[in-house]
Length: 113
Image 1: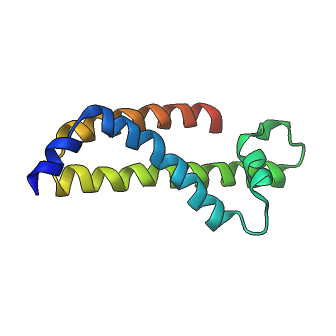
Image 2: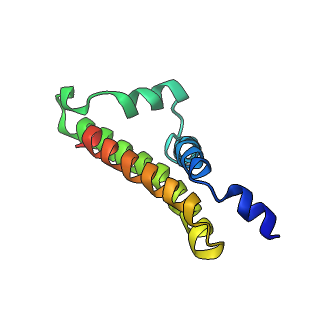
């Protein structure tokens, strides 16, 4: 039982998990928030500049979609942190996961606001 913990308790695995779990969170956000939109349309809403929209209701909808999608991405990492740090005491894995999560959160704040 402790053997798998020793193998996975490395910072590089935490960084890898921190980079892949937000992608999974993005797909979950697409399934939850996408509704009847295609994936390419959902991606365009997520990546387009909301400030070029002239109508305030379209701009607010665009920002709300981006915020909720970013929250799904961050929640995936938070769930992994809960299982890795609090339940299994994988300290080095959690260190890499937290580093990437903080980096992605700072980047998302730059793009959302």
